[in-house]
Image (cartoon, rainbow, N blue to C red):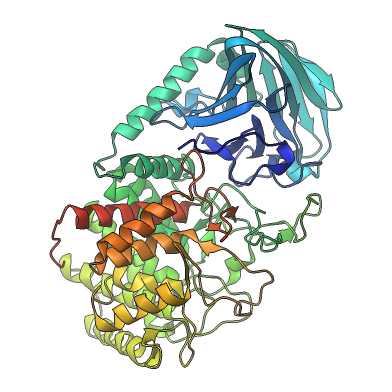
Length: 609
């Protein structure tokens, strides 16, 4: 994987020149310069503590960097773990930096913190250590004062105290901490940063904590039942999803970041540190497929609570905070200026949108979990019935859809398709489990939606399904049609659509979300290919019997992962990563496609179920 020659000044680091560490409370990105330059604390959706990734001047970072410029850098994960190893190599010496957030089988024993261990493997090297926290999106001032073995940072306002303890002396300079490491072969230093309580034990027992954390991840990885040909990338995707899940609540966030632009000119910067109901079905499917029933169960419990809390008439929010409360209102963060135009926002305006496709995602996840997990409860089924009845009443209405259009609602194919899924899965579940339901009404509605899609959303001139009735606009979310079993993967209408997408939305393996060069979504800038859509495309090709074609798209897409196997939301035609990083949906789509390709390549015939 490490095929990137890595000699770059900090300013020029691409967004994905980073690995991710985490402890299922929060996560941090560690750059190839040895800098933690993005981290929210104490939770993944809390304000930032470090955000140099977004603003080099004001964002704040915690860096351990060789003084000699031009060191060669290699970054990798220790096998089957989320422990990150960054290696600096010069003519004079080789240094290893281990980064992790301690996790053990008993999470209450370990404080919420980052552990950094630096060792000189060979020769000599001087490293500069700099820790400059910036609380509350760099809006709050703070003080730094010396404590035993380190420095305590206290922010003005209601923010947790953060401590940095070290096995070497630290100096305080301009509200930050500094150290210089003049290392000879065999020298080692240890730094632990985080929740002010309990850090002494971590510092004193850092090798034992490292070993326990490695054991935790290896044990977790060993539970994966995937034995296919894409073992490494599938496991890395699973480990990444685990880092994006909440130990406390069971939810999975879309990405650990906000404010990373989806266009090369710096526009379209959204906040993805929330849980989208839409990703739920993909997440539950992927986790169950890989044998992680515990994680799937915890996410289903979280979803059941949202379903229970939803409005009395059955309407769900599009997305929620990790703890199940409403996502924050969208506000601009003026403290981050950065080098590019386009405002950084936290919170997400899409929380107030109507997106009818979320109900299909919800029902699909409930159905899958019933099939491979546990039977639905009486109360659970009552909430489901209420939601299905809501869809029966509202499926014809325009909405903002999967792409969260910000220029008005419209009737959208993907939303209509997922309304069909809502009814289809509810009917299957009711019949399988003999559950009470207004079957006649549900059957009639399912058939009506089926007819409506074929009559309203089919364009005979271009032989393809289209985004909105009467248009010629293609939409990559149509790729879900065979994936959710709405249409046979070899149906002539589907093959026409697949060919149209390949012709008009594709640049090599990259698939764009909708017909390009239009002001379709009312937003500035032109975005990159949407990585998840490329994996859906690969899977649709495989299901259509075009396995070699699908496999090539899949393999080409694997090359868009970064040096440690992480994917961003989008990729530019010039190859760089765009959008928030790493992106759960991309890794979920990868797992699904890998699973399908294995089946096809192993010639496993799966009977229609």
